[in-house]
Amino acid sequence: MKKIFVFTWFLIFTNFVLAQSHSLVGYWQNWNDSQCPYIPINQVDTNYNVIAVAFAIPLAGTTYNMQFTPDGIPQNTFIQQINSVKATGKKVIISIGGQNHPISLNNTSERDVFVNTMMQIINTYNFDGLDIDIEGQFNITGGTIANPVDSRIINMINAVKTMMTQFRNTHNKKMFLSMAPETANLTGGISGYGGIWGSYLPLIYALKDSIDIIQMQLYNSGSMYGIDGRIYIQGTTDFICSQTEAVIRGFNTAGGMFPGLRADQVAVGLPACSSAAGGGYIIPDSVKAAIKYLRGMGPKPSTYTTQGTYNSLRGMMTWSVNWDNMTTCHPRYAFANNYASIFNLSSVSITTESETPENFILHQNYPNPFNPETKIVFSINETGKVKLNIYDISGKLISQLRNEILSPGSYFNNFNAGNFSSGVYIYELEFNGLKKSNFMTLLK
Image (cartoon, rainbow, N blue to C red; front, side, top):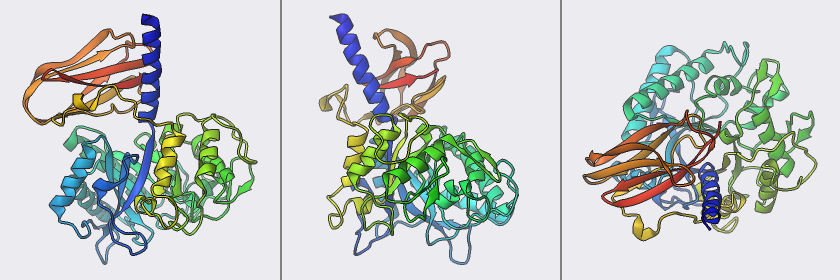
């Protein structure tokens, strides 16, 4: 009986961890549109666990002095809404640029102004990090992926590195970093390296160890080469599969080899509905078929044949949560619901609602899966006795990270599993006699 119980919980633990490791990224529009109205950020569908606020933009007359103002809502109210979203364990990040707001750092002075103004925005609004959605401003004139020569690219690389350092020094955690290149900027490097073609590759290569998610825009795109040498068009399962695999496996360019990214760093970026973009929309069933094939969980949906399977694929991204909220072009939140279906998300939980008081929060560890170290973050809203324990799959206590009285605030502990074997582990926060637990996976 005990063996059956442990095995059953192992399956629940494993499924929970895998679900937690996936992301649904949604761009939130900081403006009102008659065709796609404004919605409060704290009313976004709960499936979205990374919300990218669109956009921080340069002050008029500059391409580097950044500003952000909430549209139609007081600053303090917006900050409260962000904090309420974050309190549920979600990430809220600030996206820069977009289609209509050029950003370029032409020299080190402009770079420094960019860093200072962006950090002011991030710290003011308590954003978890940065999303780079700069369109049309990176151009390759020479050099290689590993050794770029263009000042705008070099300055942006150094700016982001500086921001990462400043964020960690201020907040004692890693700054979340994502990018949303257009296809020409990334997989366009397969066909040529120069101008806009492959222009994000040096940026991605230089920051690859810091990037959380690359969510290439598989929309508003021309036809693109896959790593099999064939051409694919947007709005098809072949386009999703060929372009996503290219980002993961990497490819040769005239500027050198792009080595690719881990599958858990890559999300599939698509428009929420047919009205959300000029092209590239694909119906939910086809999206599901393509992603399940990429993850090795379904048959080949069309002609493209993958060279591997990528079960740890990070998830999906959409422009935008506002469009996904609309009923004029598809059922409300069809994109978010499709994500939940594709990644088999459920309401699996180890605590009931009555056991989850509002006065303390235990966040999902990061990174997850991890090797050998991961960070565990929790918050308490009143003074009390705190214990933070780590258990193995059998329920045996293997480490106690905290056992003390703490004042209200947010805290973190690093857990180093260098002496432990691969597997699923449980971390438990006990606060004034009440408990919350989450699961994490060590992969060596």
